[in-house]
Image (tube, rainbow, N blue to C red):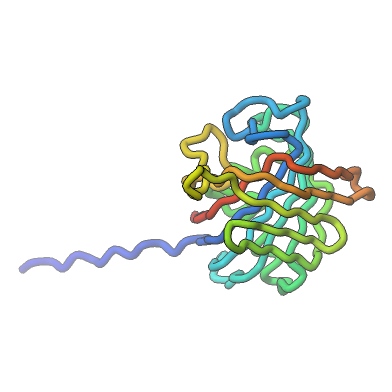
Length: 213
């Protein structure tokens, strides 16, 4: 008598997130961190903004929400536990959604986000703010309350195709190409946490992410 083999079931994912990234920093041209070099001037002032177009974390739907981290990086981006971070969670998030987003991006659920979180040395603050994250026709804009605003657009070839960065040593959207961009405006005003800067026509990165664990 033939014994029936049990049907294997794929374990549910802890998180499955897809969307778009807007990122800008103090470097003057292409982000040196992505190729493993020290930032311009030896240190980096930056933000990373993840807009979740579709996603779940531990079964909690977080579609349409945005998470932003403003960071100061004192040297090479790959130095573990060196970044100083202020986190902003979309004001539209429920308490349950906020907890889920922070669990994922603060490394408590493993996967690629835990790897990225290993670079954080100090969490200065976690706050809730209204966030506007928009990407239309290649141009991206980000507004986080009265704390941050930025506008960026990608570099393009003579034929109009977007300039991409692939197979880089470092990535905030692992597994996906980055779109090399320029931020015409990049303003951060968080004096209560020692993060105040204004940059014009400096490095920016855009990209699509698919993050799973």
